[in-house]
Amino acid sequence: WVVGDGKNCLETMGSLANQGTSPSVVSDQVGRLTFTSDLARGIIHLLTSEAPFGTYNLSGEGPVMSWAQVAKRVFELCGRDPEDVTEVTTQEYFAGREVAPRPLSSVLDLTKIKATGFIPEDSSQRIDSYFASLRSRPPHIAGGPRAPTGARGPPAMSAYTLRACKATDPARVAGAARACPQGDGCEWGCVSG
Image (cartoon, rainbow, N blue to C red; front, side, top):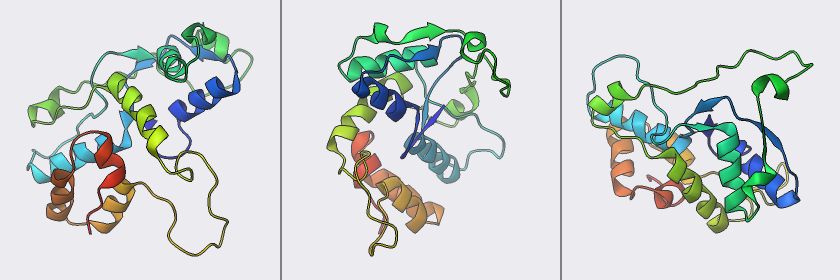
């Protein structure tokens, strides 16, 4: 349920919607999407807040959604009728195929991380902001053509990838995170030098 740069469930569903495809999507697996930028913010928070040592669950907050509900929202954002997404069970979707078992519920308990003062963003609202950010990305990031292999210059990366590569100590990472507003602008426009 993790969404970041490159191929991911949201971009796949958006592509299918734009191609006129009407997919079948499982409706009995539920959870919350986790955006990589939110995951990074949570890690930065844990490192800089001196949270107690331990294991923390981290996903988006907000309503629990099925994969089919996520797909229907993407179709709606792409101007398609959400009913063009056919809901099927996991058993129906994988009928006749041997696949690894998948949990029907991937909902994580966020109580422990919230107790440290970190409140994850609403994943259902992040779907909307994710698609808004796609419209503002340069073509090579928004699924357009990439530089040929061997081309000179740095590879196309989002700002949070650059921040993670360039800012290695927690104080510097925290400074980069504080310098950015919450939401889409931070994801694509803020780099720690």
